Length: 191
Image (cartoon, rainbow, N blue to C red; front, side, top):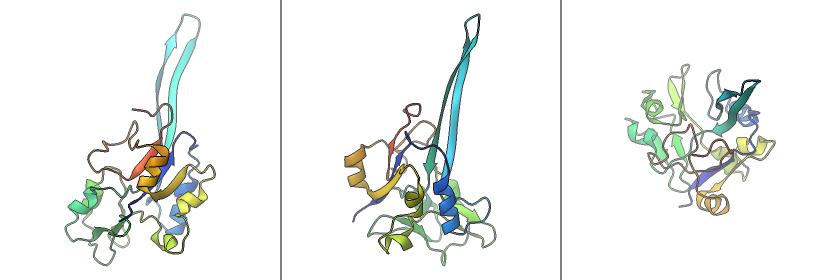
């Protein structure tokens, strides 16, 4: 099996949300449902030196979706077996004909990947655009990133090329689900 995953170059991501918007458009998602999300993280303070206030502010953005984890918490918590990890590529999918909308997957996922659709009473999430992959195309988030800050492919190849960082400041502990994700962190996001 070749496990597929994502590479995020957070150091160049500007938070434009093109990845999120294109995913939402491709999947025709309702308001409030986002398979790929872009988060902003800000922290800091200031110092006074008697004459002026000097800011010490840090900020970065981060694009994230389902990480197609080695040990998906969503899969373990689905009571109907609607969630499976495909043996051929490791992509974690939610079978819509089996999902009954318990939302246990949503509660279990530390990354917020599964999203609940109130209209159809089912959960769904990023499936790495498997319909596009079958045509030899990139996932839509990868194809639309104007800075090319997102890549996908066999996770082993991505790790050889970019390293093995899979957690940054503000993210859940990667040891829990072992995400198939590689990150080049922004200078202020390093753990």
